[in-house]
Amino acid sequence: MPSLFGLERDKDVEALRELLATSDNPMVRKRAAEILGNLDETGDEEIETLVAAVQNDEDEAVRAASIDALTQLEAIDALLTALGRNVPEESANWAKAETFVSDLTADAPELRMAAANVLGQIGSENAVRPLMSALDDRDPRVRARAARALGQIGEPTAAGALANRLHGEPLPVRREAADALGHLGGDDALEGLLTIVDADSEELRRTAATSLGRFGDERPIDALVDLLGDESDLVRRSAVFSLIEILSNVDSEKSDDLRQSIVERMSASDDPSIVQSLAEIVEEGTQLHQRRNAVWMLGRVAGEQSKKTAVESLINVLDDEDQLIQQFAATSLAEIGGRSVETALLHTIDEATSTDAIAMAAFTLGKVGSDRAKRRLERLVDDTESEEVRRKAFSAMSKLGGGGQDFGGLDF
Figure (cartoon, rainbow, N blue to C red):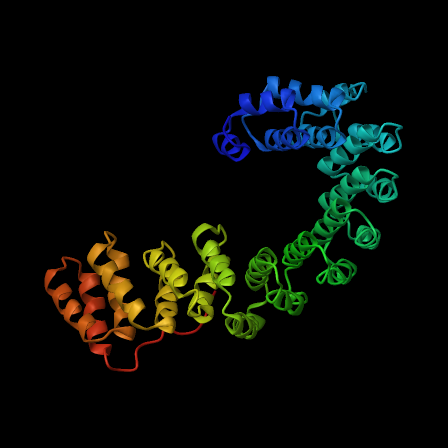
């Protein structure tokens, strides 16, 4: 049997369904349920298996995961059936909300969990107060799902009640409360999150770092910069992602100073995980401003331990469809400098198939190249059929030995 990771990667719903129904290991059954809830390919047979797990599995964690999976799949009618409840004839959200608000006080904890899940999914503001009351539920599984639902609804008045669940609770409750506060925003939410940035739990610190990145302004920056020194690689990486997220949203008048301040702290640590996180944003990010910030930062935080990762990432975006990313990649490579950068750029000229990559590599050699770069550029001028490449190569040759050229101000 392939690993659960392999089954998730291959979206093998039949094998996952089999594991949920027959595995002797409750952790395997739980994970199978979680994966099924995240897959688009899940169909009627998988929903039936999840319903059976809700009704019959002896492990409460498996039942809870199956309830979550059915909620994520929006199989609400099936979930109600699994819990022995009648499906409301009225399909409007307000009618469903009324039904599930009343179920927040049901005797069965599984029904209370399901109620919290669905209320969060519906997003009904009328459910905020009942969900805040559910934060006092005797079952921590219900408290955790009530916290999650409040984060989904996003009503700021719930921040105080959620902050009260950040301490003295089982970790799943604390984690869901911290995650929810990041969706709420506001001073109360920020104050609560700042109380757990030095928590004993690595997972909780990581959740706090991620949540702080959702605030969209500079208030959490000091705390996130401090988390760059956390003992956990995962926490440090979450802090990097959040700092980039904030820089991508903060007022442009403040962004330059903030960027410089953050870079100073990042570069002082020479932490490879920071550079790896920036490289992941460059390569996998979906937001243009985030990628631009990460490309610019890579050239200014890469130390000896992380230079290779930074250079490879920057070389790969010399032909990015966004011209600013191309330019920032060139300036970042020049910031790193040295023979290894020159070698990488020469290799790009020799091996790349993209005219843009060759042109930008040639231009950047004008900032970092030696005599061997000048000789290669001379051959490039003679050999290339691209006027853009020839122009960039001529420009680079004129700059070798000089002060180089800047690309102007930072407009991210």
